[in-house]
Amino acid sequence: MENNVFEQMANRYDTEERIQLAKVIVDEVRPELRNSQSKSLIDYGSGTGLISLELSDLVQSILLVDSSKQMLEVAKAKISRKGIANAKVLHSDFTEETPELKADIVLMSLVLLHIPD
Image (cartoon, rainbow, N blue to C red):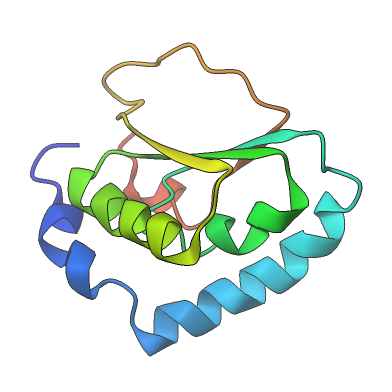
């Protein structure tokens, strides 16, 4: 994405309102991931990991993918701070290139509205 506004707002993205919205989403997704301990999850448009990092205990591995390097830097700091061993990040913009990735589960939340036609 050109002029990625998320680069500028990454360090202040996790507002109380966004944290509460993520909690609602996590509460809805969590029951769907029961029995997924052996599965891999890709969170495309992961941002700072507000949703997927809260699900890390339910899957074998998580790959957070985002087009904003700064959002992923915030996510990496959370991964380190929380000691989450099964999460990694990947900087990629699927509107420009699509890396070959494999996963059992793909999660996208509040992403499509930011992707041009």
